[in-house]
Amino acid sequence: MPDMYMSSHQLLQQQAPEQPLYLFHRSLLTQSISQFQQGFPGLLTYAVKANPNALIIETMLEQGVLAYDVASLAEIALVQGLAEKAGQSVSLHYHNPIKSEPAIAKAWHEYGVRSFALDDEFELEKICRQIPDPSGTELSVRFVAPVKHQVVLDLNTKFGADVKTAIKLLRQVAEAGFKASLTFHPGTQCTDEQAYVDFIACAAEIAEQAGVSLHRLNVGGGFPASYVKSFGPNLERYFDVISQAVKQYFVTPPALVCEPGRGLVNDCVSLLLKVIHRRENNSIFLNDGIYGGLLEMKMVDLGWPLLCWRNGQLIDGPKDRFTVFGPTCDAIDVLPSPLQLPKQLAAGDYIEMPLMGAYSSASATQFNGFLSATYVTVQESSYCALQQYYGLPKASGL
Ligand SMILES: Cc1ncc(COP(=O)(O)O)c(C=O)c1O
Image (cartoon, helix red, strand yellow):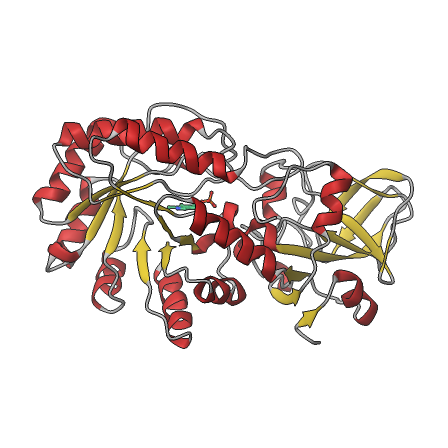
């Protein structure tokens, strides 16, 4: 099967893929990268966890993204391998606040990682035991602001020192001789830009109370993509409020870093799924489900737009509610609520879901032997047509 097509229409006229297929729209990614590069008032790093596919990272490298937020040794090895192949040198920020001690040692000694995140004293002890020379290494204290915001998944229930702990930890980091930074994550799909202002105000307070001049302030990810049911203001609005807040709250504004995942890569991938079975009671079975690329659909109702194809042509006409099952033998492999799909939908038809670039193939398993990992490049995205159809706000990369 070729790995490049003009459009979904062309692909489906030539192929009838049996496995789920991720359609990579490269130009949407390059537009999204340049939006961050030109608009964000600091360093753009990419949160690899959102989508570690080589096509994505190779495009990032080509477009000059030379810093990456990584969560594991496997992600470190992946990015370094692709960077070497591309003849590029990259900085890696090992920003999983909890790491095993051997992983810290290997990251520093073997991979040359010089930026780590932490949110408690035990992690600092582990880092101090493994890093012989602190002076060239940045430690970013991950903190949580005592304010709640509109986010889809709140990562701060798992990570982040409270303000009091962060003050103490930041001071300890500086006293141990590391470059002392702060980092936060407002939560993924953060549709309220005020969250960044509150976290930045809190960062300024922590730095002041600790008596530490920050090396950098990392404002995390969280930048929202535009789904049917969940979207925020445009990215420029986020960049403006971040820029203003840093000037407002810091006497000497620190250098800024961001580490978007979803907001950077969500729009550039669509998922093409095959209907493998239809029962009489309006339920269908797809060749992918919650153990594959559709896990987020089980967890959060963001509203994914979709289109349906038969023999390479779009299917339209009256719609009905369908229960949608995945291909595995597990009963939980079903979407939480019915989807509106054409009444005539039948086995052998295809469903294309745009906005599947983040946390889709990235978290797919091979449960029951079903693979959801194959990417092809498709030049035109069906998303633009869909945007008008659903009256969607402009997606970040468009
Ligand atoms: C430390 C860190 N940075 C960045 C991200 C990316 O977040 P998002 O995809 O919401 O932009 C995550 C997501 O889990 C994260 O844990």
